[in-house]
Structure formats: structure tokens, C-alpha cells
Amino acid sequence: MTTRMRPDIKWLINETAMLQGELERIDQEMARLVALRAAVERSRAACQHTLEYQAGRTVPGLPTVRAHRQYGRRGDLQQFLADTLRELAPAQLNTAQLAEKALVRFNLAMSCPAELYDFKMNTVGRALRRLQALGLIERLTTKHRVAGALGTWRWRAELPTLGELERLAGAGAGEDAGAGAAVGGRPGEERPWP
Amino acid sequence: VALTMTRTRTQTTLTRLVALLANLNGELAFLDDLLARNPGFAEGLACRWEVLIRDRAAVQVTVSQFDEAIGLEQIGGAAEWARPYGGRRSRSLVSRYRAAHMHWKLPE
Image (cartoon, rainbow over all chains, first blue to last red; front, side, top):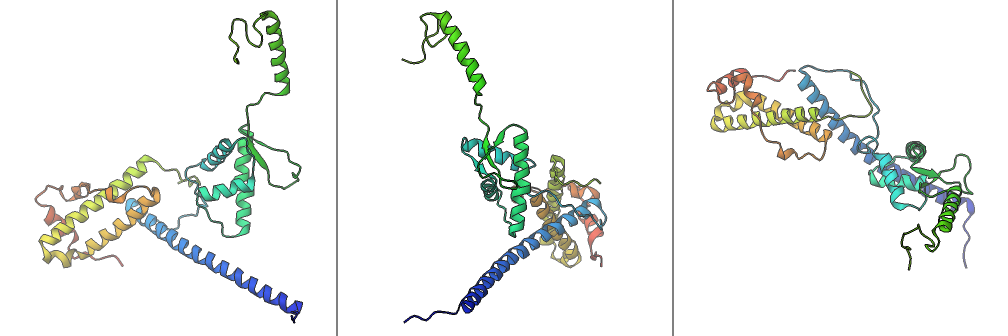
């Protein structure tokens, strides 16, 4: 005979366990940030020491700069996104997939979902729109595309438009008429197929 | 100074940082050698030795911050540090060096 657990008890057990898991995740993240902070503070202190050594005097009260995230050299993120889309062409990837690849490539860790969202929408999104403006990639129109949705991107292929194909076909037909026996090629040219 | 967000690194900066590290290496090697040959100087020059060790550690971290791919162990010693004492080959180097640093105390 099975006993049925009261739903409120079940929910409370589940919710307590979930919050415990959340606390564990926060503790892990905090431990990572504490270690990272100690390493950054060590580097800051060393740079300040060297600065004062080289300047020959104390340099107090330096202002703070929220410098660019470390993607290597300036423009490296954009270059990485362009390379990824070019290598995978004609495959299409959305912003989230590209952001995921960038996180792995640059060994980045996001401390919370909000930071990851900002990284996708602002950092990666802006780099992709810049590549689009340069004409290197194109944003695809998908049926899921709604305002605020993640974009889907593809390396822009050098494909002729329908108009160009028509013009090419027209030019080919004119040459064929003039060439007589040389069907399918320019006059005097060998046929490219057997 | 106009602070920037791009953290531009130049060859000149790297050269100066590496030269600084090489000079600290050079002076430390000289001091280690001096103390090995004259154990009696150890007490008087201990403070200078501590300062050099601290400065070198800071500069090593700074060079790594500039470019973590740089092999610190490949940076040898330079002799520029000895110029204020009359040069590395000067006979009076030891006496001038001792006069400058013997019983010197760390600033509070």
C-alpha cells in the first residue's frame, strides 16, 4: 500500500532542497570570486609598487578604469566571431550559440545569469551587428524572429542575385548564337565537361 | 594622464620593465655574491637585500601582468644599476655600495 505525501510537504521539501542547491552554487561562485579577487589585488599591488619605484615617488589616489574585458587584443572577439561563422558557412548560428563558443574560446566565466545575458545581448550582439554593417555576415529572417529575440547569423556568401543570373543567362545565349558549333562555351573554348 | 579602456601595450614599456627586472637581478646577484664572500656584512645589508627581493617580486608580477607568456627565468642580469656607484668594474664599488646601504633602515 502506498502512502500519498501531502502536496504542501512535498513542495516544501522540494523548495528547501532547491534553495540549498542555490546556496551551494552561490558559495562555489563566491569562492571562485574570492580567489580571483586575491590574484587581481596581488597584481594591482605589484603594479602600484613598480609604478612608484619607476616614478621615484608615491602615487596615491589613482582613478578607476573599467577596462575592456580580456578577449586578448582589441577586436579579437569580433575576429573570433567572423572566423567562426566563415569556417562553419553556410551553417547558421544564433547569438546564444556564438556567445557560448566565445565563452569557451576566451575562457570566461559569468557570475550570474544577468551577466551572461548582458554578454550575449550587448557584447556579442554588438560585435555581430558591427560585422553585419561591414557586410561580412547576414542576419537571417526566421519565422521565430520577434522583437528582442536572439538573432540568427550566417557568413555572407558571394551568391549571384536572380537579376545577375538572368543577365548571365542572356549573355550566354547571345554568345551561343554567335558561336555556332561551340555550344555551352565561348567561341574557340573547349567545353568544360565531357 | 589620459586613462584609456584599451590597455594599449607598447614595446617601449616592455623594454623598460624588462630592463628594470634585469637590473634588480644583477644587483641581487652582486649582493648575494658579496654576502657569500663577506658574511660579516649580512647584518648591515639585510635591509637592502629585503628591499631588492620585494622590488623584484613586484616587477616580476608586473611583467607577467604585461604579458603572461614572457618567461621570467630567461631574463638575466644587467649592470646598469652599478652606475651610481662608479660602475660594475670599479674597485670602489663595494665600498660605495656599503656606504650607501649599510645599516640602512626601511622607512616606517
